Image (cartoon, rainbow, N blue to C red; front, side, top):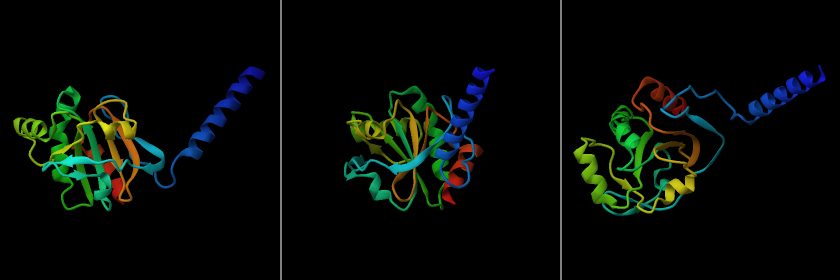
Length: 183
């Protein structure tokens, strides 16, 4: 009897701790990918400001996109789940036109801009733009456990949540999630 009460008390304490750690405001709508669900950050934390390259080989950083909600997709051309979700990310980009949100698909390919350009052209992905981090510094700085990982970064440059693995980024559930954070 005492052991059962102790377990119940411990479970209640864990539940209270989890709800206290949840961010203030409305809960994000659920969104699931191939591996797991989108996980909101308990506390928004600054996104890395390390440099990466644009399609012209110029250095930029996530700080250059402040003022927008970023859907930062960490990917590589050799990653099969990444390749699968590229068309959906391109369609999401089109659906987000005219909003304050942007898809930034950041490749970790060591071959650089030319390799990524050739890949996108071959796969008919025309609107995502070329963004390359050939040293893989950004995924490490974000603490990404694998590719693809997609991270939402708010207009103040803070990570507000992530999803590991590929997902249907152009579906209604993804759009509901992004609209939630655009409010």
